[in-house]
Image 1 (cartoon, one colour):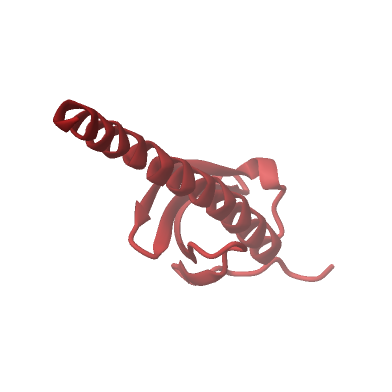
Image 2 (tube, rainbow, N blue to C red):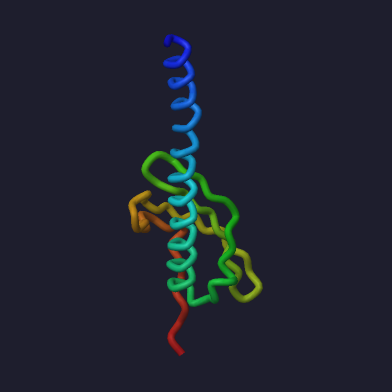
Length: 102
């Protein structure tokens, strides 16, 4: 009986990190999509010109670093998003210059 409970505890311990990783991965993916869309909208560039550099899950937020190509120039942009069911953009830095209306 002791061996059974020991094995059950070990199995639960091994399964729990996998579940937490799945949530972090889906939160990360959702934050990347939200940040790319928001940066694309603010700059007026095509979403294909907003490229992922890296993303890190940090507690209750996801930090997404993006490369934005505009007029042949590279701009590095950092976007912080919440880890809610629908990610909310918390901050974008540096402040983006929006596209001029033509």
